[in-house]
Image (cartoon, rainbow, N blue to C red; front, side, top):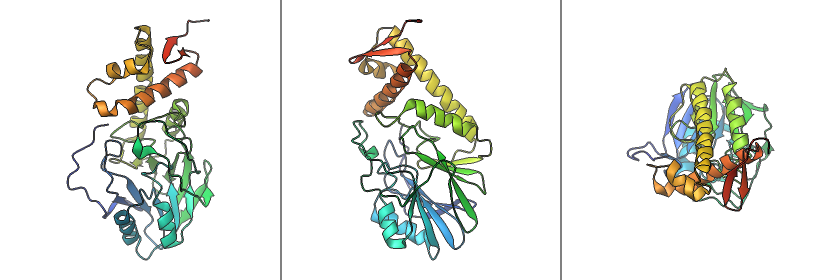
Length: 295
């Protein structure tokens, strides 16, 4: 989760990164957003879609509008409603008249440590996409792929014509996704990873933060393995007598910036809840114990 050197990034500039795809980078870098939120513009002709419009930052919104130019925005599509992803949707709609289409509205009081991950209370979609539903324009089609886990309302968008997938925060090449209860759900997250792994037609991922993923199934397989390794590590910690999250995190995340330990603790909690559902651990106030076989 370490942030890169934030030097000479192409903020507020439209970059061609793939067929039918341009990128505009928002100036909101952080240890959780890497160099910032990447807004994607899909389409090269008279109609385009804007994916993850990002924070409601005037510079970023103007850069998106400049990139769109004379084209008509037919959809403003949000992968989820954390406030580094969706707040610019409303002002873009006001400027372009385009509908907000994509994930469902979701507003919770997040008791996790990530200020940047608070939910966007003002998000109002005109149309919510179910898994497999599509939106289309001149020369392009986006298919919604439901991927709950990071948030319960998370969607990815598959660009049918090219095999690209816009993965939001679900899959990123530079970092694992934070899964923070109560809305973040490790069981759902792992199921969503498996769902993407089974999609053999996908050729490249464009996350909302960080570089493109050019070997997507290989990365997803590694991410599933990493999460299974984490749960084995948690079980070993409990067996060794380290039964609270506060005891586990410093041992499990040695070498990680301590400022990120609270977020790491949320992912550990998500793992523990998943293990509890599978009857492998049980909770006793702040402590967790192993469940004996056949008990």
